[in-house]
Amino acid sequence: MQIYDFVEWELNKFRSECNFTPAELEYFNLRAKCKSNIEISMTMNISERQVTRLSKKVKQKILKVI
Image (cartoon, rainbow, N blue to C red; front, side, top):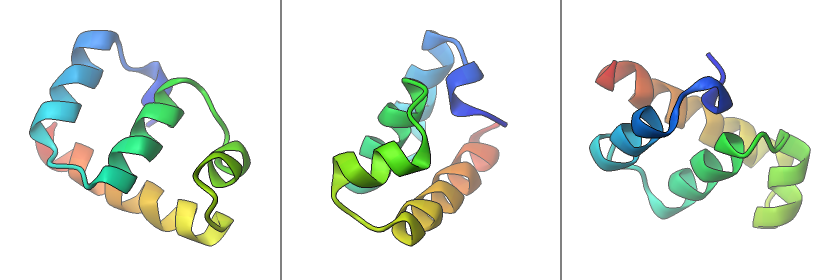
């Protein structure tokens, strides 16, 4: 599952229904723009490990909504 493969209405559904934390939402929005985890870590000023953790949390929440 790649976040950037979803269409805009699906992205909006996830934004409203997944109850993302601010960090998770920022990660989600950056991935929707096809940013890599390395680019996200530099943009959010966090480690790649933290980005990986955010990724897992976001994907778990998306799977619950699907």
